[in-house]
Structures are given as structure tokens and as C-alpha cells.
Amino acid sequence: MRLTRLGGSMASEEGWQMTLKAKSEVIRIGAEAIVSKLEWNGFKLVSKHRVPKPYRMPELDKWVRERRTLHEAKIISDLKKAGVPCPAVVLMDRDDSTLYIQFIEGSELKKALDELPPKLVESVARNLGEIVGRMHSNRIAHGDLTTSNILIDRNGKLYLIDFGLSAVTDDLEELAVDIHLLDRSLESAHHPLREKFMKNFLKGYSSIMGRDFTLRIIEKVKEIRRRGRYVEERRRRS
Image (cartoon, rainbow, N blue to C red; front, side, top):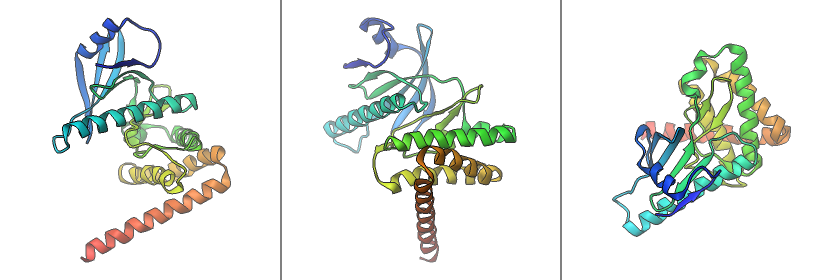
């Protein structure tokens, strides 16, 4: 068992072993990982355990899960240094492909957005645009930027979560996919708010990335959307 402590000096190694034995509550099951909430010595944490895949050779499976765990931990660390709000990684168990992450008291934006006052929706959208702009200015694409992967706390502060599909990139399309996915999630779950939200989101994004880059990325988002419609139309006709 290789335990790596990534923040603070909260306990001895023996104490950290206790973390792994703490009672946990599953809060999300994804395609590659199980996310659980746990409490250890009064500290609330979230564990993200990448589960073995039986269709892969055991050696390859272990390598893939470990590499993805390391990648996600590094992305989060880089984002924290860049001032992007996201939960901190506290501990990493490389052998078990598990991250232990700061627990944020809040709700998924998907569940909270429709209940927010109109003025707060505008403020949240602009703030999110600034956050995503800061992330993109550091060459990081989230990879799954939907309202399910954004938390909002009781004070209205936003946090990005779940960087399992993230990438370090200079590719305009990979960055544009983030905005496309956000737009699609608003279209499907918050349609009445979509236009106002995206308008204010892009104001915040432009304040970080600049007008010219924002216009380029908007055009790329439109291109991605057109391609998706073309593929869907071909599928219907076949």
C-alpha cells in the first residue's frame, strides 16, 4: 500500500490507515469509479475509487487505474495553484487507485440552479465563466463540464469537481467541448435559463480569456454542434 499525503500534517501513517477503514456512504457510481462520503476523526472526506475492469488484463488494468488516479491528482493540484476553486486532494492510495478529497458542503448546480433568484443566476453564470476561463488559461480542459460536476455552497461559491476526463491541452476544440457540454446540460435540464446563463457565462469567460479568443471558441462550439446535428440526421436516415 503506497499512501501519499498531499496536504497538511493531520496524523501519523497509522492514522491514515484508519482512514481507509472508516465507514463510508456511496454518493455516486460512475463508469470508472465509485465516489463515497466518509468521516475520519471529525474530518469529512470524499473517496474516489477506480474499480478494476475484468475485461482488461490485470497488469494493464492496474497500470491504467494508477495512471488515471495520478493524472487526476496532478490536475487538481495544478488547478488549486492557479486559483481555480475545486476540492483539495488530501490523500492518494496508489495501490488501491483511490483519491481522498476534501468534502464540500453544497449541492450540485443541476439541483440548485432552478431555485436561484434571477439576479443570482446571472452572478453564478458570470462567476462560472471566470472560473472556466482561469482553468482554460492554464491549458486544462475539464472533459465533462456539466451542471452535475459543479457544486454550489450556501454562500453561492462554486467548485468544479470530477476531473477524471480532464486533459492538459492547447487544442481549441478540446476547450470548446467544455463549453459545448455545459450548454447542452443547460439545454436539457434548465432550458428556460439557458440563454441568460450562457450570455453571462461568456461575459465572465471573456473577462479572463479576452474577446478575440472567446469569439474563436464560440465559433468552434457552433461547429461542434453542427457536426453533432449532421451525425444525428444521418443516423435517422439510415
